[in-house]
Image 1: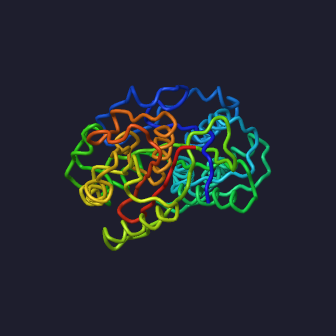
Image 2 (image 1 turned 90 degrees about the horizontal axis):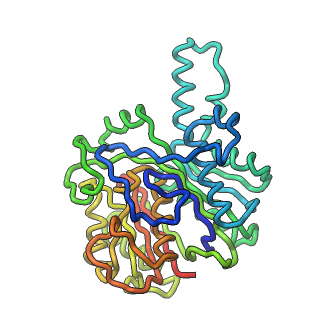
Length: 354
């Protein structure tokens, strides 16, 4: 199963929209919760409709609109999105309204917009797209599942241009809930120093990223998505390396053929050792990069990583802000993403030059 990435659109805590710049001007944060830099939504939405939409819905529609324009695709053959939390802000509004109004006189808007498939549905409504539309809610595998569905749909001949994406938002209440169970750091760590942190927890993040997967190579092509591998609750480092080797062998590659690896290092001392072992041993001959200091940790952060990997392949450059050590290859043919969420949901993506 393979597909070409022919368009991208991303809203993130970095300057990733309405620009051709590739992370040369990184936004640095001194806080443990990163929020997206949002565009002017009047450029993507009717202002009257936008007033009734939650923040993540508007981010999703804007990111997908950027992707459609970038790929020059008007109507996709299918829409697949992944989200772990759905429209969290609207969910909170509805639950609070139940309490405040003693379960009476509730307006339906927040409830209708709180469902997990709201973003994909709103994208389809904006386009009047009646094609296959599905949302995956698989925690740390939510975005990855949408990508797998897109690859399968293309492989089965049921579509030529497939929109896939991931989106999740951070709210103050959700931050506090996750803080109680140890998701976030207790001390404030500047984002550019996150990789050197040796304490438990990470920094919170959010974002919305969409990609056009196409069956055929087009004039504008970022990279070729060649494979994706899920590794659920690996028992050992040896199992991780074995599963990655199997994925690469299917494409007649070895670890030495991987020019760049994008790691999901997030500063959490409990889980970063996995990346360190891969970086220092299995992929010791590959250029090492990381990304979560730019977008924060969230269940669909893999979508930000795929944007970075796509841009690395397309531009044949690696921003200084994501480098670990020195660059070891002049030409970048193969890029591998290795990411996990809370040490449980591990996934690897393989991207190559078109």
